[in-house]
Structure formats: C-alpha cells, structure tokens
Image 1 (tube, rainbow, N blue to C red):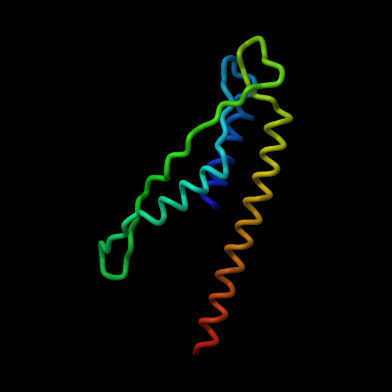
Image 2: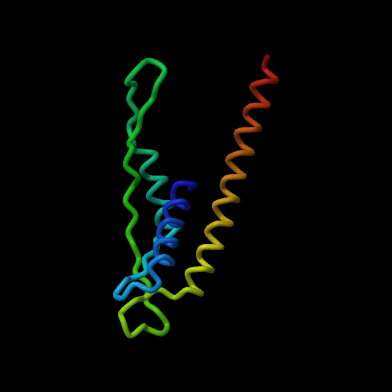
Length: 119
C-alpha cells in the first residue's frame, strides 16, 4: 500500500502544482480499487532468480485507472482543480502513508527482534 499511497501523493501534488494551468484536469485514483489491483498483482507476479540469492520482480507498477475530478464550481478556463479539496486529500493521504509506514516499520522491527532472539 505504500506504493499506492506514494503514487496518489504524486497525483495530488501534480494537481496542486497545476491549479493555475488553464484546461488542466485534476486526477486521482480510487484507493480501494488500487489496493485490489495490488493484491491481485502481487499474487500473480512470477519471481525469477537472476543470480543465486537475488530475486527480481516486475519493475512496472500496476496500472491504476485514473478518476477525473468534477468540480463543484467549474472554472471559466476549464481547470478542474479545487485547492481546498486537493489540500484535504493531500493531508489525508499523507497521514495514511505515515500510518502505513509506521506499521511496516513496526513489523520489520518485530521480525528483527524475533531473529535476534533465535541466536
């Protein structure tokens, strides 16, 4: 999910950066749908040994369908970025990214403690 959250953060940041670009269409992804794609892709991606001890997988992120934002009040220049909406999505996504990162970090810390106790 970290990759999905990071990708979404890039999209939202791009929306914010293009808030004054005439004709720019704000985009986003459906987090739940992207999570399902990631779960399905991780189960079906074959891993191959290229060198003994090394594993490689697909370097391409799974494609996530983009959603185009329909603004509450359309701009005269065709731009669909609403800064309040984008800032709220940016803050929420940042919080969820940090939460996911903390969970992964805690999981690895727990695994390291278990491995050290095996010695």
